[in-house]
Image (cartoon, rainbow, N blue to C red):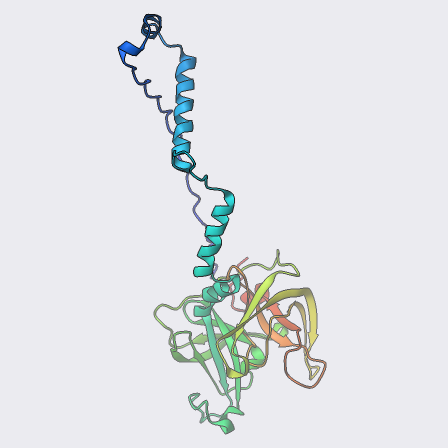
Length: 310
């Protein structure tokens, strides 16, 4: 299904306020006013004088707001304001951009387990013998009916697939679509939380090397975990260790990713998904991260789910 664009409502400009008439000047005691001045006061006051009086009133009001009108009172400076802001931030620091991005996407991230043993129920995670017969990865909810994107290699060959949602809800999931050329699989969970949230996807058209991103997943089964880095390059190619498949048009990134991150989202600082983590490059035979990870652009991934959003 096609997502409707989200809009933020702009505020209407405040209507211009009618100019406030200046208050009439306070009358001085008759005894203190010479006869000539009293006669002039009785004459009509020119419009220019009224505007001058209004300007003076505004100036006095500004002074009253900015500080007390007492002799010797210290005037508030920009340095005072900066110091107050620093003190406030030291007392209650603002969350980092990466923390905000993680909070935005975390409700949509799921743990994916491919059960290679038909007798495995997916719950005995402490059984090392059965754990060796499992494929562990990550997925991200893209439609709130339980449609999940992950990597094909995470679930390939599994007898059954189980997913665990962010709130702890567990469900069996069915494979409903594949895109082999991009190592993508689409799952549909049988049972979903009532308040399940789908991730927001964002076009990669304006993605640039140097943009900050986070990778969210379950590295080595520990998770959900998040790592922080940047986009290192675009339009990269990766050939699998077995040499059976070459992936192209990939996003290269340096946020830490390890086995278990596969299928998880690559997320920008606005909390929107721009890719699905799919591979890491290590010149040695070790399957650990050395600073080069790859993600399939979300345009390809969304198309696998039958919902190109852009």
